[in-house]
Length: 71
Image (cartoon, rainbow, N blue to C red; front, side):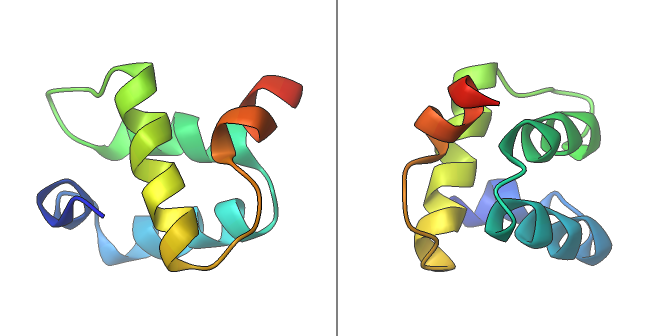
């Protein structure tokens, strides 16, 4: 996980993102991350990649990419 990117998020947002990722609510996680990352918003693909890395850390099965396209 890109620690510099993750550290730009507040602890509260990190917890909420983890909950969204583990419950399969990928689009909501992408939206939240892009809204809270700060003045330099992430490109969509960068956000998906960061969330995929976080899902791997959380040991959530299945790729974020395919869940985002199916929601």
